[in-house]
Length: 363
Image (cartoon, rainbow, N blue to C red; front, top):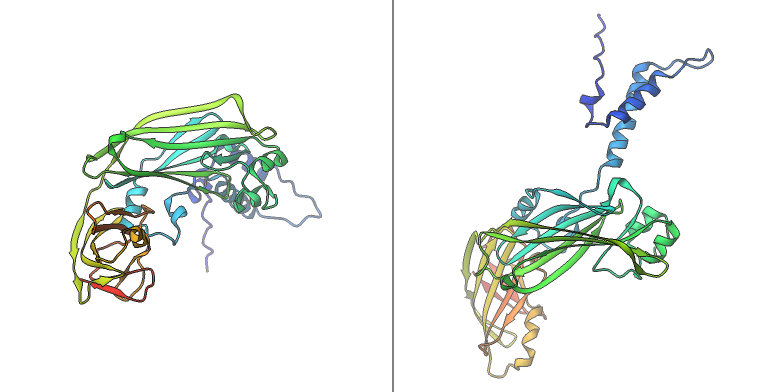
């Protein structure tokens, strides 16, 4: 049997692109290996394969960890497939903000909310400790940072920067829009990566009656250096980048009215109907209720403990607006607004109060 000739190895095709200097250094090292009479021979092919493994490992190590809303929400909130598609389609852009690189990762707007996420990391892979501006420098560093820096878990950001002998930066990223478009609150959050980077999350609630097909505002990226010894800002170590960006706004894609089947009385309220409006971000539910004569108005906030369930009695994932609202101006008429993280309008639902003992069937 004829032996099939071995194919020529081409590392540049077999692996992701490698910096020319790195590739050259490894190949030069491979060529410089000398055989000693007492040393077992190693084929050049085996050596090249070993070098390829090193290159692949280095590429993985050097690749920046990409964080997103999925890392923030985990299993606690429902992030619909449509929302994930929109988030992934965001055109990412790197901004040099002093010693840090801040990357615009994701945008999502549906008329009722807008999300902007940006990931801050050390420029050029330099070692540094990054804290979100919304955080507390006296708070303990997250477990990921404790593991990365080989420090005890009960170490504050200030202590960590001193012990690790590295600069400490406070990073901020937020989206500013016309105040007339606001309809509620702004919420900030962060996610720490295992590589020391931080995902900065900004969410605004907007008025769907005023927001157009595109939401334009100012993305502000701000970095300041902190002196770990004094916890004060270091003079002249303050960097800011501002840029106008536009975010496409997806509106309502489906809607439906649900009516109670059987009893409509629950916890001192009669349910009239539930209006569901679906967007890429999830499903908004508005329950129209009427309080009984003997229902105290000061107890109206107990409605925040009510929950929408599927027809089998399982709770829907919470919506990514992370809050609900009440309109009680027409008392005894009350409207409860909530959001669920579902991919499609349910065929049927149930509404239950905090006791979870009774429920209203909806169809």
